[in-house]
Image 1 (tube, helix red, strand yellow):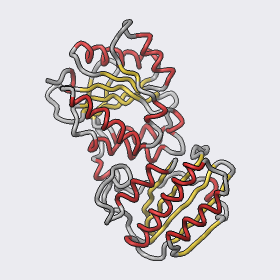
Image 2 (tube, one colour):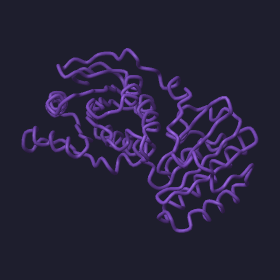
Image 3 (tube, helix red, strand yellow):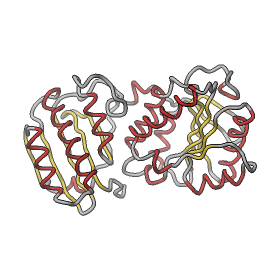
Image 4 (spheres, one colour):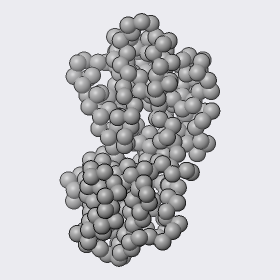
Length: 320
């Protein structure tokens, strides 16, 4: 039987918590974890290291709380989804009636790459609903940009308060609606310059060759290989499922390579495309998922001109 505010709830109990001080963070996180331990529930912390240390010091010595490695888990949204599901499945296999996690995204992810983490926060309402998970997603109001807080309000069905209250979120939007909205990501500054490569209706082989030539040792081998695979998959999808012409553009900077692929179609029908490995590949779902596994940032954008995917390999954290 589940305990606390999630008692009687089936599936994922997803809360946001906006805090203004270290004291507020501890006022919510520590009782949440201790109550889970008292009920014999697996409890975990996935906070940035300074906050993880705050919580660690506030817990009783020897408290059986798991501290997850933030950097590894939040490498990419699709990776976080896969790894979390593996963790949750292992807890359920051991008989857990409820699993508690308090976590936060590292501050660097709230900038230029926030758009795909906003998609993640929305998608997990569906992706984790197979599990008796109660998670509290913490956001520091002192440093979190307003545009991020606006998305947090729409991607979390519930809100935790420092006084212990748990409330329904007024602005929550179902993932099926949220994930299909036009959501332009900030332009990479390189996109305001002339591309190094511009091709119309390239074959996947030509697209791969251009990425290899542009890389020329700039990226680590695994990153370069991942971008080559991702560009090939995305170009193939656009040619097969999009509407012509398919336009590929490539920019090269000292720390990254950026590729956009645009066609005049509406883009994938599945709102979870890229984040979850949907389909058998016949509709491009697996190809998009591969691109999200292979690149350091992927954006989706629909507008009146069609659908654009932007793939970044290297450092995606430009100033916003």
